[in-house]
Image: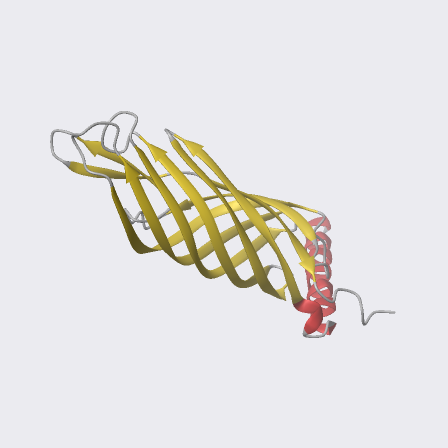
Length: 206
């Protein structure tokens, strides 16, 4: 009996939250914000910023578009103490699923362009400059603080991994094998902290 009543209560609360979400105007579902990126791993540094524009489809799912600008630096790419600098710009789309209010699962597809500058430490290799582009699919999870039913304003922290692992992706680490002359591609953790801000949240409420 208690289990049945608990199930009915939980279902009722979920339905009420969805009904409140549906009553919001189109504008009240919109949010903006962004995040910063910081990743330090095995001689690799990634720093960047990504403003976004999103839409809350329901209390348990939202999505939108994002624009990226990132600076990356890697050492020991081909030989000890060499350096590869990268300026990355691009954009993509994202979706977040919320099994509970304070936790989410995120998938984000991006296409980024990378300007590269390589500086060797010896005369064994030649310096070069180039521009490449690559697709990335970031998958991971995150934690929110301040998120509640009907609200688009909250802070979040997430950790993501590029599951495509394209060698030209800004979210991978390249390890050079002197014996084979080939690179091994390893994905690195991408830590993102940011804020969602409801653009018109509560303006039409009494």
